[in-house]
Figure 1 (cartoon, rainbow, N blue to C red):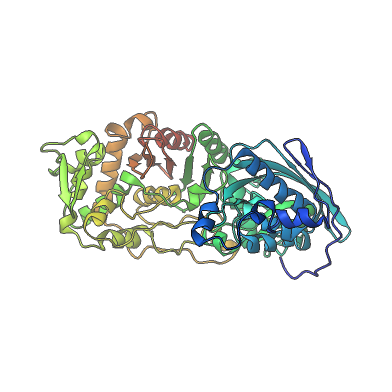
Figure 2: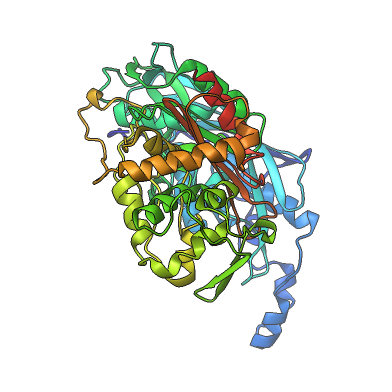
Length: 560
């Protein structure tokens, strides 16, 4: 945000907080009342003998569920103190007084929010919703601020007293622990993102793109020719930075002049992607152009985190595309040769099985791939080195090296070196393997084009950045067999129903990834059609062919 002059906080107005319809007023200097409420010894404590034993004191610590009165009273104490600007009193009502003091002090001093009114809603158990109304003022510019918040009351295990469970999100729902709020001249000017045809790209138009637009501004705002405005912003701390979350604008007091950043998005595909994920909860999808690596569309049903580009999920059987190239390269499999697909295979102490415990007797590798036979891949684990899959993913597919430069924050996939059962599980996209739709769309794009092209949202010519490359290409023989396997799967295998009606040069692979504590697996689907490649995931959706498959196929149909 740049350096800012610190000004003294204005005297806070002492308005009461409204809690569940009741007015709570804490009068400054009310001696005993304040002392008893914020840590002093009240009448109950004074009845105890000062010579009570440690055991007797331990028994006096209250335990068990919170009462409705405890929840309401604690919330009232905190909100009233916060509203009146009595930071020490508000912080004392929380589970982390030090962190609360810092953030509540900065709320007035750095964020410059004053004249705050806090109104509590009806509690649900230990959770109390509330609304915040205030005014943000910077120099001669002011603007009203309104938002909804919530707090949760917990019982302190040491004292037995109810406290507000402190997290930065108590102050504002967009804050992660360690974040701060600051108002001033934004260090990064705003941007106007446009699609490949020059049309403006906004969050209102494409709801999935909010976090990506923040990331674009962070990367290109200072070089796109814009001028900074006055804003209330979330400045991310180390924890949020580790999750690759960008600073976020909460309120614009005065607009700056935006610079223009051109993206590779196709407006028709982007609109269709938004519509498709809106139909299926927890779904995400990405569409690429294999010949260039351009990202043509990406969308998420949930808008708080960009799963499509930054997700880190086990990809299930879509990983078998990479594993198949490894087995074919090493002479351990061939499309039309007989390949084992038993009901079970034990390796490293784990007993692996196929969905519904099926087996294919005297079948080919093509049949095993099309039906997604797990044991056909696991059975080859004894013949592989621990780092075989890792090297294949890195060298031929450009994954798992954390060096993609897309133009926005991304997760570039992870295929760690593992041993025994975990290594075997990695061959079928479980174990420690982690991917997202961007990564798996890139895998299909590599098979279709024959060469890894690092995906990008902003052309490298804009800032002369270097794109990641793969150290080798797959052989013509391996590529030919993979295209045959994926085409057969799209026409006759687990992807056939979803790909019905998708004509031309096509290929696909389905996947289901088991997740601990989740009743249904994550459903995956990756495919290509001509110079389009796409991948999607539906978390806790079930089989990929039934969930992510229709989303991906519908977008491939639009590509012509």
